[in-house]
Structures are given as structure tokens and as C-alpha cells.
Length: 330
Image 1 (cartoon, rainbow, N blue to C red):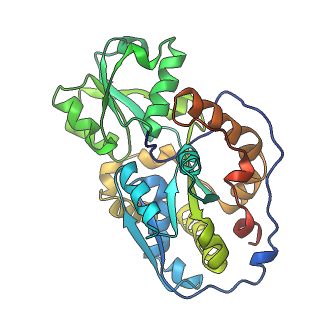
Image 2 (tube, rainbow, N blue to C red):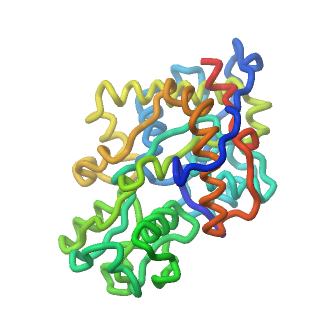
């Protein structure tokens, strides 16, 4: 089963393991290798700092010759891109990384990017008053995605399971069309598709959001092991560029939101207050989380939740998926 963007954070506790930290010696004084750095990316505002870094010349300022975005919409496409060796990195969810590892691929999380609160949601007609009312209804969402995790979480809290609904496996970008056409009773998706749906039909509303389970959905920057070994300077420059972009965003959010909206194919005015539903992690937060709660609490919980949903069949430890080398060298 393919798994879509973004990870599952702080869900249902989980076993505790020792923090995973890698020595920064390999990165000490590393120069930035020549060549263009290529990464696959979805049109999701959580990845917005990369658009800011590109537009504001941050990549160049950090010594990168160039950064190329390779777009993808669904997971199958991203898996194919990664398998081809076309890119050095991708932007994905932790449970997405788990599937890659399960398939024998070699990737490492080097950076936490964002977490969502109201930018991921179950959207339904206002006549549906609660998650409990979804029993027996048809729901459009992408199986294996963060939307899958969100609807499972919502149903569980209402005393229901996925067996109590009819799933219509639909890419996030097409979920709204399924509801608007009447082929589905409700949908689960994320921005900018939520705002577009609400604008298209004022009769729709947010039934349940990721804010109901704080930290449930988050994203990370994932780099191939080959790149970590062969282009350590580029990886360090990419991580620093994210941090610099977050600083730029916090200083001038309106300007940066316009850049991000353009990057994901929307208009800042159309996205409204959706940016308030996403938090971008600073490098300081990354250093605390990737060597602390994320490794000791969140990652084990991801294994549990992903296994419960049948998304993975093998468990992994934090050391199998996290590399803090570039981060700790900054």
C-alpha cells in the first residue's frame, strides 16, 4: 500500500528508545559539492520553505549551485522517482519513510519540516454534524496517506473503525470533486484542496481537523544514504537553507506566504487563514526533537499506528531512519 505525505506524531504514546545522534565530524568544515541538488516535492504548503529559499536566493547564498524541484502528485509517482535514482531527496511523512525502508530502500530523515493542525481535515456537508454520523457513509480519501491516518484517528475517537464507512480511494487533489459530484458523502484532504472545496461549495464545512490530535501530522526532509555519503556539504547547505527560510518567513510572513502560494499553484488570498494551520520547524526545534521526543516517543508511536492500519508489516528503530549529522554540524 502506498503512503502519502507527512508523518504521524505523538499518537498513542509508544515504547521509549534512546535518542539517536550521529557525530558531526564528517560535516565539520564541509564544502558544498558542485552539481544541482534534485528533490521530489508535492504541492503542499508544509513544504513551503523550499519555495521561499528558491525565490529569495537562500540556496545560492548557502553555496548550492542549484536546486531542482521534481513535482509529483501521488505516492506511486514519488516511489518511482526515488527508485529511479533521479533525485537526491524527497519530502515525506515518517510512515512514508517506513514503507521505503520496508521495501529495502535506503533513506534518512535529516530534518523535520512542519506539523499540521487545521490544514488537514475531514470535510463534509453541514448536514453531517459529527464523525459518528459518518457511519455507513462513503468517504473519499487516499488510502495510505495522511488522510488515511486522520480519518482512522477520527473514527477511533468516535468509537468506530474504517469498517464502518465505505472508502473511496481518491487522490487528495480529486477528493473534493468526488464530494461535489455527489459520488462521495464526505472527504479527507489537505490544503490547498480544502480551501478550494469550501469556496466551491459554501455548504461544506470542516468536520474534524488534525488539531483534534495535536502533532498528528507532520513532514520531514528525507535524503538518500548515497547522497549523505557523497554530497555531505550539499545536505548541510539544504538543511541550513530550510532554517534560513523559516527565519525569513517569521520576519515577513505575508511576503513568504505569497511565494509559497505561487509555488503550490494557488493564490495567497485563496488560502485565507490556512497558513495559521501549519507550523514550520526551526533548526533549534529540530535539534531538540530529532535527538529527543521525536526519536524516543513519536517514532515508536509511528510504528505502532502504521502497523495497526496495515501500512507496514515490519517495525523500525529511530536509528534506522534518522541522521542528525548535517543538523548537528550547524
